[in-house]
Image (cartoon, rainbow, N blue to C red; front, side):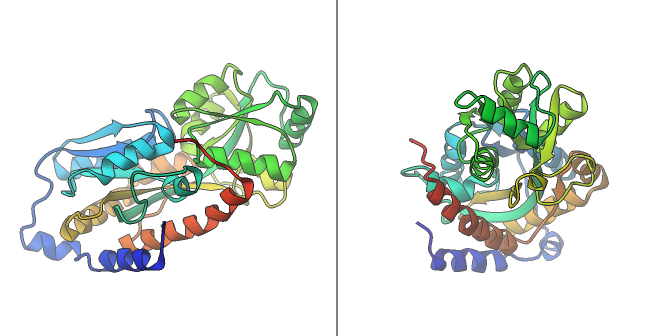
Length: 326
């Protein structure tokens, strides 16, 4: 379990990371072989999309292959365990989001320490989720969807990219605040959930905007609302869930982490090059189009952010009594 000492140690290690420019001046040369970015979900989802956008730019900068390796399963725990036990040489990067904060509360036991086994590199993006239904369903607003749930008690399903993801937690929060009944259908990734949403095999999803927005724009699904408390600039005409269900506010995030014993000079270079990639105009513009906000951070800022996510979601999960079998 987590404690203050671990967070203080993690932040201290992050602060100790040397700046990137002196490293280059001293002839620091990394990477010298292909780098892999481990994605804890299937291809096509928001995590995968983010990894590929950033990874493609890093590949251009480094002149080395950046390979995206998808390791779905167990709400991200399979990938987390693999990265935690990988060589701490910088050649294995973990792109992960809220699951790193929430899985410790969802699962009876973990084979890794979500704080102690990983060193933070940088926060990548934050993004709203988008509540979407099949175009074959009658609901055209959040209010109409709530009525649909009440007219079909015990029959309505919501899809997520896995247990403990923001898609799952958004669904649970919606159930509680809107006082409706829905059955959770977890998938091994967001793309698989969308594939079942489009033909109406599930009734709703609260998916990450970068992966679901193109389908909404193409008319394959119907967007009802964004999950953040404020409307989103890229889709200003789509209302918020909170406009109908007061107090509703959910957003997603992704960050880069590496095995905890990775040398600080490598973490520093990863941090500098990734933050530069996020600011690179073609990458930033693409994220903007998808409704995501490129962030960038220092390692210690990501460590503090992870702690805030743990503090935020731990009580919610406990109160809702959400548990997942290993």
